[in-house]
Length: 237
Image (cartoon, rainbow, N blue to C red; front, side, top):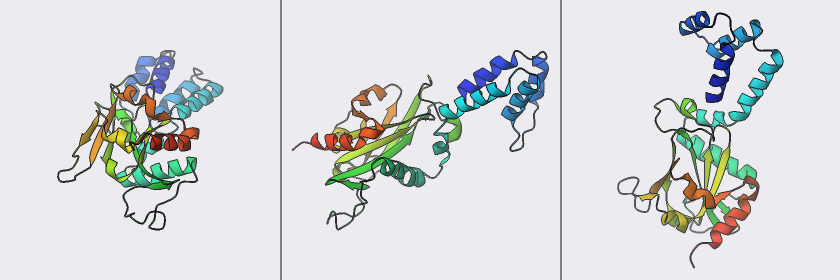
């Protein structure tokens, strides 16, 4: 939204009556689907400040920068963390299996996927403005934003799986980090005891000031299967 607001502000300066327009905008009543952006864009086109081709280009650029904004509109944590994130990973690695007693006699819901004998837990989080109290889809950030951000990977239980796949979502990109359970458990940013009484459970915050510490674990989407295998080999014997 930052990019779009700046571009529209630049175009508005070309209006002959820009202050009058801004005054009207301040008192604008919006009812779906007619809102301030529809009002601004239609005015710019009507005043020949913005051509139809330029509008199409503006629209395409906005969609490209916000391709994953819909993910921030998933309000239920379980629907986001389980249904969406696990489905996203399964679409990239179709060979992932849902675990069962037949694949692991000791299985009782401890982890999410089974792959070549490797127990995998999927965790997901979304990059949001750390200083905003707005709804998720409003404070969602693009990957090139200069604002402070944080994402929280919760209910981490390193003793119950072999490998973690973390799915990190920005408005314009999804990034994947793959770590062995040992690398999570011994990570300096891992905090034990997320919930009182829950032994072996913790959480980990990724922020703008520590994200570089996880660069070594980032894996490209088409290399995730190899990344999981590699992380498994990093477990201590």
